[in-house]
Image 1 (cartoon, rainbow, N blue to C red):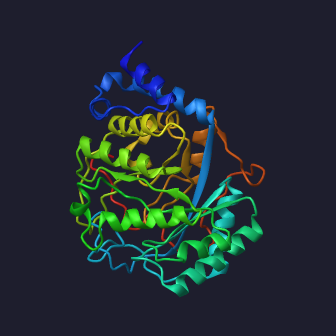
Image 2 (image 1 turned 180 degrees about the horizontal axis):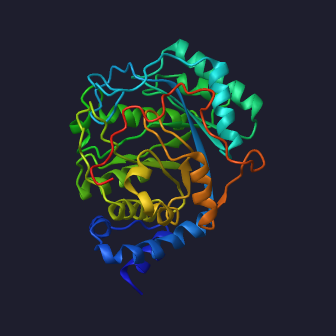
Length: 354
C-alpha cells in the first residue's frame, strides 16, 4: 500500500493526516500528482459518488468597502476597474437567482461587500431570501454579508436562509499580512455566531497569496476544528489595482495538491471549487472534480467565470452528474444577458503564461 493509500484509509476512518504528512502532500513531485488524485478520489466517491453540486452567486452590493483586504478588488484603496453599486432591488436579485436555478444550481449565495450588515441591510437580505424561497422552495440560500452582530444570524434563519459563508481566507499566523482592518478572531466569531444560530457553517480559503505550505495546513486544520460543512477553495485572482497585483504563484498541479489535502482533512465536507479555478486549474479542472464535489456556476463577484454552458459540459463530459437540480435539465442559457449588473470580468487580470 502506498503512502497515499495509507492516508486515504486513515481519512476514511476519520483520522486527519499528521502535520508533517500534510506538508509532504503539498510537496508531492509533479509526476506523482496523478497518483495522489487517483488515491484521494476514493474519499470523494465514498461520500459523494459522482455528483457535483452547483452553486450560483448573486452579488447584491459591489465595491464601496471600507476593509483593506489586500487581495480584494472591492477593498479600500483598490483601484481595480470594477463596477460599483449599492444594493440590488429584490426583483433583480430574484431574477438573477432564478437564472442560476434554471441552470441547475441547488444553492444560491447572496453576497454583499462591506465590513458587515446594518439592521436595514439584514431587512433587505431577509426580504430577498424569503422571495427566493417562496419561488424556489427547495433551494438552499447562503448569505455572505461580512462580520455579523448578535441576533443577525437568527434573523436570517427566520427568513429561510440555510447557510452563512465567511471565509477565514488564510492561516491565523498569516492573517495580518492580508488585512489589517479586522482580525482573524473577528472572522472566527462570525462563523461561531452563524453556527450557533443554526446556519450551516461555510468557510474556506484563498490560496496563492504568499502563504507557506505549513500555513495552508494550519488553515485547513483550523477549518476542521470549526466543523465547517462547506469549504470553498478560492485561487487568488491578482487584480490590477490591488496590493497583490501580479502575484501569480500557483500552478495547476499545486492547486490539485491543495484540493487533495483539503479532501484528506475534510473527507465528508462539501469542497467547492471557487474563484480563480478557471485561471489556475485550467485544463486540470476535470481532475479537480475527482477531489472536489461542488463548483460555482458562471461568474463570481468581480471576476469572470467560465461560461455556464462550459461548466455543464465539463460535468457531463467527465462522467459526473448534477446533484439535486431544482428544475429539469434545460438547455444551457447565457447568464446575465438581460441583467448584466456585475460587469462580466471587470478588472480581471490575465496570467502572463495564458
